[in-house]
Image (cartoon, rainbow, N blue to C red):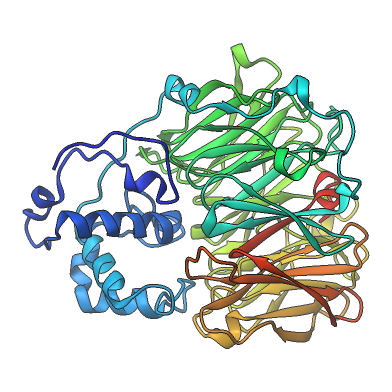
Length: 545
């Protein structure tokens, strides 16, 4: 098999173009490894990237998910692997029986019994070749061109078609479908609460696709001019952040393992920093993926989560030529997190270690580690006030139906700080938790449960009583799940996605809008392609959690 070179990434993204140092035929010649045709190997490679690599890693060494190297998978055998892929597990793995065909499931089971291919690196020069400007900064409009309340816009990830939908939160109308990177994971903008105060915070948004493409969006522009620039900084990626002064963007790579600093105005890549290194156990890690990245509200720095290293890197962007990086040891495998209300402490899940890690961005040191249940996953997080513990934060779990809540106010409630306050048993494992200061409730999804009736339902928890007051099933359609929450700007509405987990090039999902007080359905926004995460402009730039 000839080595392949990377071309412009399509929806198949990084895997379809991966360069192999060894052909599948040669790899399969190793003892006990099965064989595949080159065509089936290519197809399986795509499927693995799209469905499996996020949890199990490009090199299949595991993190949130288990190690899938042949030494482990061959022991299970073809039939058992097919069953696990089809039905999922109670530990949090999705069921793919309604998403993949029997042939695809069979091919994936065979593929993970063969040594994984190693993708190539990506140079700064290659990134610059993949930099495009569609609207020059000098041509940006000086005021909003559409007459809409852009600060109550929702930006909604349309995962499988590589788009972001812009929705008018006042009118519940789709404004635009914007072409971005494949399977955008996160969108970020400069925030109001940062001490550096970027100009017009919330106007410019930056997306990170799983294909490593960063896209810049201007919400003041007319819909056909909202996408103003893009650059590809990795082949597989998850997160992005904006500096507090609005000058720089940072994008983190899963592969290659690095982060890249980009000029926010032009999207020209400026600096690449490798994330490979020695983990908290003293072992060298080649696939040290960059997970969550956040701007620190009170410092001129970003927090960069090194997933496999078990380290938070606090990266000072005040001097790019002499980049200061404080490496803070914590626990593996760091994934996603959120700030406390003060903006000083960052709370992040080390999900495969079953811990929440707390970093003090003022001292640039580890503040605390909180033991929680199996595979915590807070997503963008939730902070609220509890009658007993005072200010608290919370997380759902990928591996168990539970919400864990801890105190997070060491200044005003020292006795309860970084200690478990209470837990709530839910019907199934979930991915996201969300609330609002004006709301009496916390909303939790159950997307990771293998049973449709559970993964299609969300649960509403009373902040005072800690009881589930309502379970709402959003759909009964085969292959659909309820996922992710976002409040509108004034906190009166809760938006929930109905996500079709099967790939589709046609509108196949919708958003259900609930009254935040009565918990009754108000409206549905249809015409969306696999909607997942949603980001309300006002709430995100004002640090409303």
